[in-house]
Amino acid sequence: MSPNMLEIAQSDVPAARRTVLEVKELKTYYKTRLKEKVHAVDGVSFALEEGKTLGIAGESGCGKSTLALSLMGFYFPPLYYSSGSIMIGGIDIMQLSKEQLRKRILGREIAYIPQAAMNALNPTLKILHFIEDIMKEHRPELTKSQVREMAAERFRTLHLSPDVLNAYPNELSGGMKQRTVIAISTILNPNVLVADEPTSALDVTSQKAVIKLLKELIGKKFIKSLIFITHELPLLYHVADDIMVMYAGEIVERGTARQMIFDPYHPYTKRLMGSIIVPEEGMKAHKLAAIPGAPPNLKMAIDGCRFADRCTYAADACRHGKIDNRTAGERVYRCIFGPGTLKEWYASEER
Amino acid sequence: MKNADVLLSGTNITKVFGYGKHKKTAVQDVSFSFHEGEIVSIVGESGSGKTTLAKMLMGLLKETSGEVRYRGKPRQLKSHADRKKYWKDIQAIFQDPFSSFNVFHKVEKLLTDCMKLQGLKLTKEEQFRKMKEACSFVNLKFEELHNKYPFELSGGQMQRLMIARIFMLHPKILIADEPTSMIDACSRSTILDMLLKLRKENNMTIIFITHDVGLAYYVSDTLYIMEKGRIVESGPAEDVILNPKHRYTQQLISDVPKIHEEWNLAN
Image 1 (cartoon, helix red, strand yellow):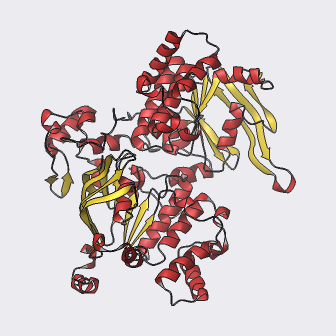
Image 2: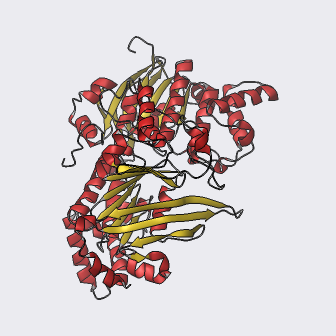
């Protein structure tokens, strides 16, 4: 089916429920110099609806960033694709050639802000140059002055000074650079924006400015959906509609932001939420939860639950076989125990 | 904490970089007194002069005016021997563990250097035992690590190795410059646990330099809030965070996303 036909077929679906991105059983791996395979993303499935913000949380090395790269089809060695499908706007991107992917998908359907976005700008070129570069590829009919006009207009709408366009990247502060990168990468109004740790290197004041900008992009419909990757849970609580927690290449739980923060099911999510520190009353009395041990080695095949070695509640049954997703209401989590049992444990722990 | 001895104090410390037109005052008229066994946090946004202040405390930068006193006496930092003596008592861990270690030295050498700094004359076995003890304190396996170079370790391992150094040196004062800003929330808890355990063991003073208001509130007894090189508010952590008086402190706290309160994005 051609993408156009899909668009017509989908327009009957109410806008709020239309899926913009769907990932099924995605598996990708890194190949090390010793020819070992590190299975960084190991069977991830999820769907993102239009108008929603999806947060992805997890500790360092759990595969958050690799998942983001894989979504974009950025398969450059040492990262390789193994299996699974990625549907963006109804198109399976794994069926496209690199050229088609770059022309049709990247920047238009899905845009990406890498982790060190602040260093993504060539310091010898003015900001406007990056926008001209994108336009040359995607909108060749526009003249230089039209591009300049358009860029200035977009910057004004986003409450960024149009003077930034004539600045060199090193003249801007860290927070401003980050906001500029976001403005540049969304210039073609992509459906989905994938932001990988966009605020981790910033202080709280600049962080707020970046979040404001992202919310504005959604509010003004420049982007339709957002995938926000971070390990800062209080931030995710305010930014995301849904939160997905990743552990050792798998998604262990998904729920709404409120459910995940206040009522986690999976033992790993529970521990992760226990590590939150916020400047609020009563925080000092709170006992910080550190998770003992380290995540499993992703080079080897893992039998049973990946969290079992670090889990206080692990039983023998956890250590063997494949642990499937368990559904409770609209919640999905990867654990063999029911929500009742888990909640009883958590309650007795607090007593 | 007020009744404990004052360990490190400063009066009207100012640091100016550059001359004439390019003059930049990074730290201006800062006064403080840190007590023995106290945990202090210096909080401020990027560019507020936190790290410059930390470097002056370490004796890595010379203050333009003002005076830092250690145990009530002005510091002697003129000769290398003086500085070495000072660094026996005051140590630091930095934000980026990758750039804090000499990449040409193996882990074993990095740890034996600590003992050299202390001036200890130990046999090989004793050295080995001490290093093993320090590594097991931070959940590292010395047998696996001692023959490796820093770049062969992961970020978390290096951060823990830095704490192992502190464990061996037992300084009186530890300056932790953004110790957790590069790591995730889980490892942050582990690192904090270790630092607090260390502090309990030898009544160490810890000075946290951070922009993470939540962390500062959670760990410290006393807070100093810095804005544009000045300390705008200071006091017990509870008072400063729960009843901020200064406009900047109020702004800073409202900028932090919390989980039981709305996050106001409008201002």
